[in-house]
Length: 602
Ligand code: GLU
Image (cartoon, rainbow, N blue to C red):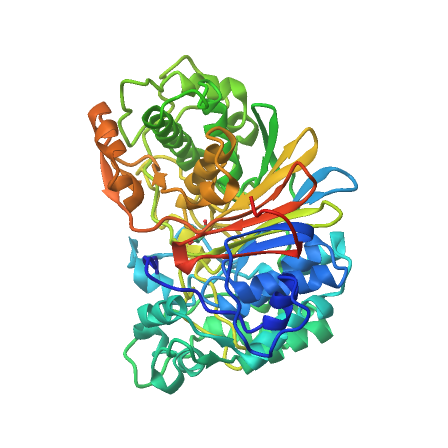
């Protein structure tokens, strides 16, 4: 579930030898811990993630000659061990890749899909939507996982190492264990009430019936064996084999403790759904912004179109020259408008007519930018525009649609290699801990991604492109982003945070590009998030700042959000080094490493 993790500290690394080598040490004592750093610069490639063990796994692959794609899969697989509540083979995600040889940006849509039997009434009983929490912890919310296929497709398309090799660091980590930190313990405690109802989940994550103690070592031998099986059989083990059979059985009859009173509804996922799963390789979204090319994820994620539209709107004023309050005002208003349009128009393009080109067009942005006034605040929920037929300023194209709730937990990693290839990859189970259901004996949790669908139309009587459907992908907000400057990578970025992902990536982009902040400071800066709601959410850094009163004087209304997002990024420095950047404080701080550190960090 979405929970603040302000005072938490991330686990210390156990892959210490690798990390110490990354820091330039010749040798390192086994199981010593290294200090995590939110920023690193140097040569040979760079990795940034929320977790030191996972970042070290990627660095290990780069050091052994693997490329950015190999390292991204290794990092993601390690996150499946140390961030098992956000990442793992029971979930899905979006992979954006810059190929230094072809200078092209490609994407993989590894989003979970609804069962082929699903209808728009998936979450209705007797015509009424079931409770959100009931839907989350059930087989009903489990979509066909896309993460194993994402890893496989990425490696086959652009990797240089076999899956078996890049899974090795993660397999080792699952077998030998990682050191539990306060964040992990807290996330487990927050989930204890439901985890305890599923013996397969409790056995791994509630050792002795309790959340594991900070400083203890948590092992997941089941997951180590699953990774070993994938190494041997490939991802067919999931889509056509034994792991898949177990997965289907688990979804169809969630293995609830007989002593518990929990009603975990079954889902209708079948072997046919697994066999039919396909990765989509659609073109990335692209907008230009002040000479930069910004590439993002096309629908089924709303990330690329929403951020793209907001940037097109913001190009109308020079944010470099604006004072801080005006900058924040315009950023908030552009987000509000872009979300109004997102909510009306974006769904799975395989089943919905999504006007992607229109949403990204400068002409449409022109018709929306004219709504932004420096001395006035727009009223939410704001009505959408019609990107198919951009109309004169302010013409309504329909009834306003508010932004539905999305979980606020997933994980993002960013990688670059010495050849100049770049990966931005966001993966998720949806809520922290997904459905709460572990596939018995396999060591991984199942997603609850299908709760990203609207259960009923957000605006009664108006077509909602995000209703469930057979084999349909729920709309996402994940926004892995790669920015090119004259065809060469400038930086790449992404974040968790449900619908706040889009505003986090947008604000970090603007802080870096327009406000001149070093990437690591842009990532650390206090955030605001407006998603076509009456109130804009502010982190404490802005809530407690005099800027709030200045914005309130213009008509803004705010709500406090203790923590928004947890971004990571990489940047190509002018001298040819790579810089990796992660959070300084949020979620206890992230982990940035390079293969060969050198010089000042930023
Ligand atoms: N389910 C969310 C999405 O696809 C991601 C979950 C999160 O960030 O918490 O956008």
